[in-house]
Length: 152
Image (tube, rainbow, N blue to C red; front, side, top):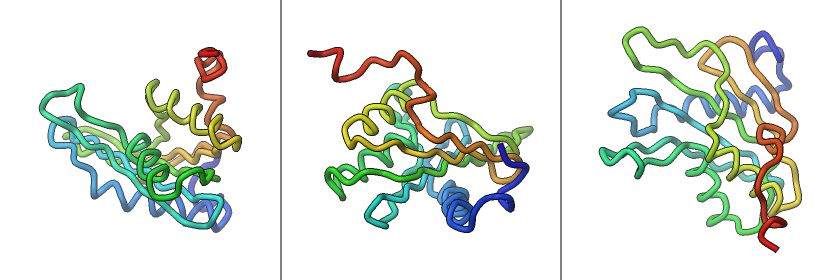
């Protein structure tokens, strides 16, 4: 845990700043909770994603899964080194000053992406300001996960 993004390495801070900025591209007319995620791939490329809501609530998709889908499509079989995730809570009394963590479906998707590419994904979690969490392996957020080995 870090007190602010100023305590991060220059590369991690830059990635988090990109995630904070991309929250503006979210489509969240119902929750007003804009999430942005930016990944640095092992080949040096970056890919971003934002949450995309839908009036039919189950049809929406989280920023993390938009990002994973885009990365997989644009750079097939290229592992992700680090993902920075941030949010902007546009609700009347909402705050954007503490780290949030991916939801359960996103945790499962992140764990499978790690398994598929055989590379841990570092996560940098923060709001628009305040504390920052760095998780060394996304799979650590989902202990006892269900994976491809369970399907064999």
